[in-house]
Structure formats: C-alpha cells, structure tokens
Image 1 (cartoon, rainbow, N blue to C red):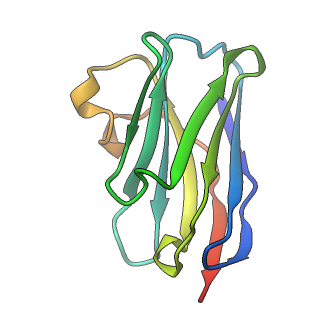
Image 2: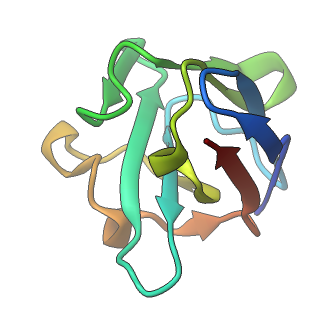
Length: 125
C-alpha cells in the first residue's frame, strides 16, 4: 500500500490550499483515512479524518469550520480543502490510512498503518 500526498505550497494568511492523497496498492473503501501535520520539534498533530461507512468526518478543534475532508473511493483519493489559513497552520501535512478501527481512536496517529511522504504547507503572515 502506498499513499502519496501532494498539493502543499506557500500561501498568504487567509488563503486556501487543496491537499490530495492518492492511495494505491489496495482498495480503501471501508477504511479510515486521516490527515496529520507536524512542525519540526513537535509531535504529529491530528487534523481531520474520514471513514467510509458510515460517511463520518472528524476534525481537530483548529480545523473545524475551516477545513473540509472528503474522499472519492472510485479514485482512491482523499482531499483536504483548507481555507482561512493561518501562519499556525504551517507544517508538513501527512495522509495516513488504517483498516477500520474504533471511532474513539481515529485521532491517534499510532493507530495508522500506512503513511504518505508528507507535503509542506507554508502560510505567510
């Protein structure tokens, strides 16, 4: 299984970016896919997650209302649409996938089996 994240870049505060994560090697319908982010020297932080059945989305407090996660199972792609970006959103963003687990653990990065390589998002003030 391979995950590839792309779409990062430099954007001004208040702007938007769209991150995509493509999953190859197996079909991921019925599983959980999430985005995490990490700033050097800090722990990896949960951003958002989506599961297929039922179509449930979960967001961190900082992402709620500004970011939207969606998935296209036919294309094995998960998208994170980010808007109203802030300098504090600057980080390397990773997508991750796991077999369907309990909802209460969906924010826990240690519960994910597969990771993409990360894409850098830089928000300037």
